[in-house]
Length: 387
Image 1 (cartoon, rainbow, N blue to C red):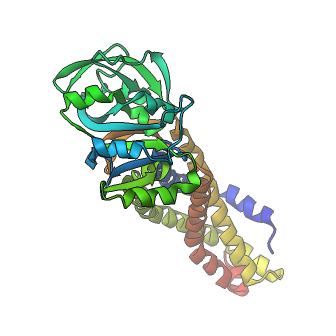
Image 2: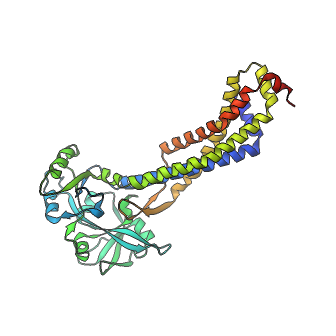
């Protein structure tokens, strides 16, 4: 094998072409990693919205709460299920909730966006211990008051602490802001379920959420509730339910980003190929010397491939480092499954880093293969005669 130091010296020798190729690869990897981080960030936000200990009940065949209708007597039937855990006072740990979409202008642009108003009960907070009030106070049942998730308070006009907004033919005051630890609840407004039902004239619920006394009995409980003729419902583990809400949009972002990255990668591959062809042309006599010293065609081939992949790997690592800074950004988009705006961060994972590195190495391998074959096929005599 040709010493690795020889390959490194050749990379450093052609500074301009090597730098341009590295920058091209880094840009492609940046785009690739950013798309995967966006998809992963959305998935992580929605998955963290659910709890492993909770289950959620919605109308049969509904894709989300926005389409679901649970009659009040059905909610009471679910609430009396023996599988539901009990609070310290002996009451069942379940909550009937209403899910409504309203239009609210964004602070930055004034553009209208759909945000969620969730009618909840005091048990809703017990079921979601990660949700903490960080400013203000809880709403009072007698007043037209709501509390806002941290992201909603920051992004939408009228949703900040002490501000007022109008929906359901009534003016509401935001009396508190809560932190849901980066979950989907951060993009919602919460208020008393009775008042929310009254202003929207909805004598129904959108969902019933409860804590399971024994999570191992979920399948049996699911079968019992779904086969109950008094109800037409689907039962999900809460975490699985919210994970499903991300599949359409996250899948589109991930696949779309990968396709764009592949298209961009063609340019990076061509750049790597040009760099390596130039390297072969400038080193014809060196290649002939190496062959005369006893290095095989395979050794020449491998040396040039390593050089191309090293250049691409350097670009890939730079692209990953650049993409990692996107983790400081928060974006908001419409979730296609719920039609509501959701705020989330770019998130980098080990799997994304590995995929980006492999992507960079593949670009180097493809871009360097033909020049490497060209170098390996040079004849010793012809190489040594080259000027």
